[in-house]
Each structure stands twice: as structure tokens, then as C-alpha cells.
Image (cartoon, rainbow over all chains, first blue to last red; front, side, top):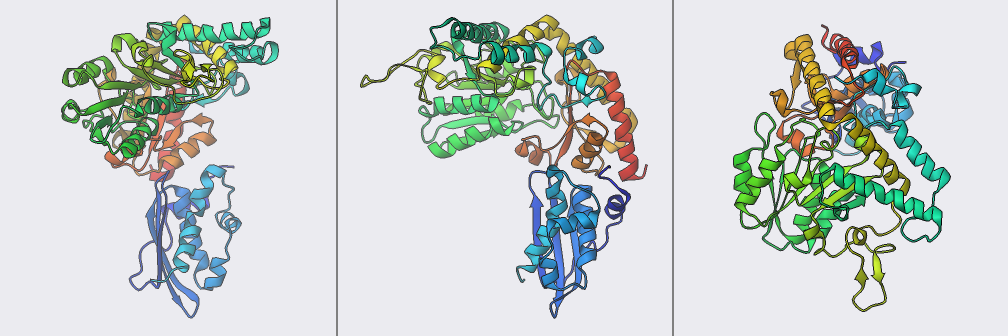
Length: 121
Length: 409
């Protein structure tokens, strides 16, 4: 099965939650240095609930579409729920299996979200 | 052009993967039947150690192992086989020469390299400069990806101890005029030791280390159809005989009990421990294979095909395609790196890979070069003797699908 399914291409071409949040309570940057994927995540947390989340960045379709899908997924979830997400949850969201070489592309968004939630502005 | 359908028969990988389009020979070249047979014969028939056995099998192994050294010396235009040091690859060879020369570097000296180097010809010098508090000068490139002569002239002065650059860039495809550049460096400082990274040149064009007048030349066996774990450091004998060894152990010593340990002569004093015997014997078979086809023929085949690929890419993708490196075809090897609009190279290589087309994507171990080009990554195809126009056409056709998929064209 091709990695480049409609879901991934749709989220790559029409990313959801792209942008930045001026009033973010939590933010983080992360990058895959060797391949040039870059992500910035802004999150607004109120009463332990993720009220708003936006991402910006550049990189391959896998890294960017997984950020789009993940930000959709965690909105209105609790911080604890987001922090408890595991790599396999990302694969369930993007609906493809990633080879070891592409796994870091798919997991960059999760790494950035967790980094943001673990540090306050 | 070479008869590629005949040549493909010499590479058993195509028997296992008949439809494979392999455009990644700059990463590693495929292996010939002769290379595979030679390594297998060593492992099955006489897998004994070299240099020390007194029984016939060990003598056979030693003889065949040393035969590769002789062949290699002739192949690259060295004056004698004692100038050929066996290593595990280009990286090992460049690290070795940086260690061999370390004792000559002092605070205030300069080391010179260029912005087009592979990490293996950059990091050893960066580390050496740091350890010795020496300066590292990086020669800049012209817009077309050639070594900038003015920048080179400014970088070389009486403090320059070592200058190292590649014969062919692994990304830009630039063929550097090695002989001219060496002459230019020597005209400014005749004492500068000159190291050439020939990894992407060695089986792609005629070359002679003596004609270049290089002091050291490093390259890998696996990029010339030989096994991985094989490489060469060539050094001028007049230099090698003055350099103390840096790796110690078995096989490189004559008298280990003397107060001043007595070491063997070059190249053996630089080859401590049991080498990659089968690999080196098989590398000898690769040399025979290359010589049989002829380096001039290989060069013509690869560069003609590269020109075909570049023309097709420009014709098919117009403004969406950006090919980096020299525009003049006579300055280019069979390496072509490009970007396709804003499509990420990992997506391009991923989709090509799903269609059985092997290319490389990323920074190709040249982060400084990509920074200077302001590119985060490129996609690279690299050609060899088994590639033909059909391979290029298949590649272009999938690239068109990618363009449609990502750019809605």
C-alpha cells in the first residue's frame, strides 16, 4: 500500500489548524535536522483542556499531515490525554504504517505537542 | 553508449529485481558477478589469514590480497603498490590521513577545505583544527557550484598546512579540475599537503594520482562495484616513509620488544589488525571489470545519460524543476541533484521508491553545502554503467505523477 493515501494528501494540501496563536499558553519547536522537517506548535490550555491548537512549519507530507491530524485529534482533550498519546496512536490517526526511516517524520508532531505541554511560556 | 542490457547481466541484483531502476550508485554501486564470486571463493575455499601463514592456503590468500594492491596501484596511476594503504572506505581513509598528519599541525596553522565537501572530508579537518587550535578555512563556491578560484587564493597562505577537496562533488556533480587546483595551491604554498577525496571520481573517469600530483587520495571500493568495507588511502611514498603509524597492533610491527618499537614499512605499518581480506580480493575483480569496459567509455556513457536526464527534466517540468550544479555538461559527472517546486525530497524519493525507482533524498551528508545553497534537502539521482534512457524515462514518468499529486498539475 502506498504511504501517500488520500487522507495524508488531503491533510497535506489542506492542512487543518495551520497558523499561530498569539495567546498561546504553551508553545514549542522541534525539527528533524537530518531531513529538514520543522514544526512549531501553539496551544491554549484552559482548566486543563486543550481549547485551541495551531501548527506551522515545513517538511514532507508525512510530517505536515500528521501535525494536521494530531492537532484535530487533541482539541478539547485534556492535557493528560494528549500527554498519554503513544506512537501507535499517531499511526492509527494517519492510517498507514511507516517504515523506520519515515517514522520520525510521522512522530515529529507528537514530539512537539508533548514538548509544548511539558513547558509553560 | 554502452550495451546496458548486456551489462545488467553482469549484476545479479537485476536477476532478483528485473524491473528495478537503480539511480543511487553514488551511495553505493551494485556488485558484479565476478566480485561476488571472488569473495565467495575466498570465504569457501581459502578463508585463511594473510601475511603470517606458512601453509599453502594462507600463501594463496596473501598472494591474491596483494594482487589487488598491485592492480590498484596501476589502476590509479600510483608509482608503486607501497603507496596503497587498505582501509575500510573513504571515511576511514580520510580519518587515517588526518591522524597521520596531526603531529605536524600547530596552533596558528590553517587547514583548508571547500563548501562542497561530504561530511567525511569536512569533519576530520574540523576536529583536527579544533584539537590543535588551528584555523579551518572553507573555500566558497561559485553560483554554478564550482570551487571559487579567488576564494581559494585568499584561503591559501604561508600558514596553510593541509588543503583537501573532492575530485567530484557527491551532490553538485561538479568535476573539479584537480590537477589545475593542485598546481594553483602549490604555486602559493609549495609545502601545503594536498588531500583529494576521489570517492565520486574513481570509477567514473580516467584519473591518475601521479598526474594530479596529489599527496594523498582517498576513495571507497564499494562505489566501484566492490564490497562494502573496502577503501584506499593513496599516499606519496616519500611522505609515507616519514610518517609514524597511528594505529597499533598485529601485522604492522617488526620488533615490538625493542625500546624504540620497530615498525614495518609502508603500507603495512598503517594496516594494523586483520584486514577485510575477502573484500579486498573481490575489489581486484572490480578493477578488472572496470578496465575491461574502459574508464573513457564509462565516463562517456554516464555523462551522455546525465545530459539526456537533465534535458528531459527541464523539458518536462519547466520552471518547477531546479537542478543544482554546473550548467555546462562537460563540467558535470553522472550525479544530478534537484528540487521540484516545494515538494519535499523525502516525498519524492518515497513515492519513487514505491515504484521501484531508487534515488536518494536529503542532505547527502553535505549539510554545509545545503546551507550555502539555502536548501533544506534535495533529491539526487546518480548514474552508472547499468543505467540507460529507459531508466530515466521511467523516473520522469513517476516524477510527473508526483507533480500532479502535490502541485495539482
